[in-house]
Length: 272
Ligand code: IPD
Ligand code: CA
Ligand code: CA
Image (cartoon, rainbow, N blue to C red; front, side, top):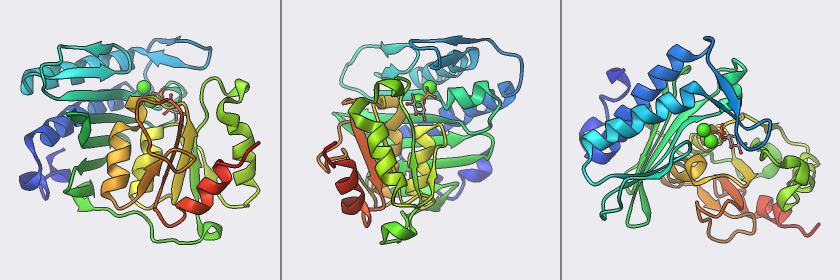
């Protein structure tokens, strides 16, 4: 495990290092559980699944962080808000992003942990346990994949781009006219991917694998770490109408390499 950290360890803050250790440990737990016979149930909506590993990984992360960083409080997907806000770090945690993949034995899932101080995300860590890819960002220090600095792609034209998207669990209600906007993007005729894990979509955008990623109704734990990764890698994250993106809004998000931002957001912002 340590091999992927050695190169950058000295320059990262203790907060980031704790997030990394928690993500690696939770990722290892998920890796061991992947493909085994675990319990699966539905949350709100038939397709919004939760497995025993979502809960196990979340407990591991919260326990580890509480023991290592005093005055921590949490916003985590399965347990909501916990701990007292004593002016310390608020940790925003998705213990298993891509639960539907995990439950269907599709090896595309991640642990996502962000640290927020005074309303600002200062560290973001996304770990993919199957491919063993550790994405780390720290405010003002850049973004890294397994210790190597990453930058967003330098592609400038939409025609040469590849985009990623995802769909909310209430897709049938067409929130934010997302089906219409998806169709508009399809008509551009470029490759579109649907990974099934927003944290991975954002990490891949930061690493230049995608030129951009758009979705609606994501929760703070889906996007907090990934937003910092994209920004620290030189990209841009906004709402579909190109205004400030608030991680708590559960509205629209568009993350990109910056170069294709205006052309895509013009399509996503079209009146339908
Ligand atoms: C989901 C994934 C998916 C996105 C959903 C999210 P979960 O998170 O990020 O890609 O489309 O909106 O809820 O439930 O697997 O943690
Ligand atoms: Ca998620
Ligand atoms: Ca989750």
